[in-house]
Length: 344
Image (tube, rainbow, N blue to C red):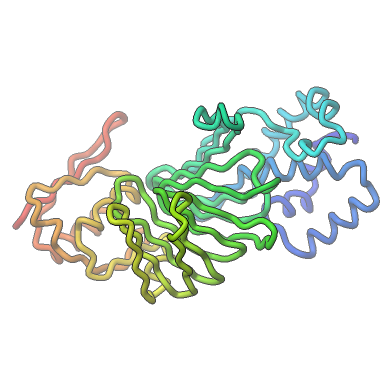
């Protein structure tokens, strides 16, 4: 192989990595048929690059190429170490395994050793974090796509989709799962397992919340508890499952999907929501701290559809709707901007 640069400089390769389609896949299937000796390293490079595809609404082609160049240079540097050692091994799909710490457009990736798995399997995990104020997108090695809402963390084994597909979630994420009848995908959060074959659904499971919510757009999912065999619920399109963590009970109802799924496009939709639930969402979206002087404010109901409005405009709407006054205390490099809400 002449070098990794010839793939990075090939627009068809970049398109295959970041914007896969049936036509592009057919092209590379044909290429591999003519060049079978290159298939393993090319697919390994593709899978590594896909780990780092992110989007905060949009990422320019230039940014993507810069990221690809950075990874390619590292692989080239260690080419002899990785390419020769793993030649002919199934592990070569992950030939470019090395520790990286990258933060671009709010999505932070790192690989780490998980002490909890040490004695059992010594498994390594990849963790992706969407910082507050960011909405990010992640493509897994099996082409499953995950949108991460602000303040969300997902973790999955580095050998994801080799023998099983497991994801650990803290926060809110929308999953577009690649179908695989032989290998269901499971999302674990707060003692709950959401199990699917291939579907599109949303899970809201931020740490500290009293409830976990699962909204199904298409397909079918099961709600399970790994340690409770009698806990088994089926969720159908258009339904939302509400799991109360303290009591372990589940309730389901039909919902307006846009209200729960439009956050991927930058919308926040509130319909008579108590401020107790609204405040944490605004804190994550705008990366600020909101303090309430009187707990009665938490019971006030707020209705609005928000997309990219300046935060002060949102505060004006809250002040009018909920009969409160607000005071903004500007932050600095060490402290977040703080908002104090007081009754009128």
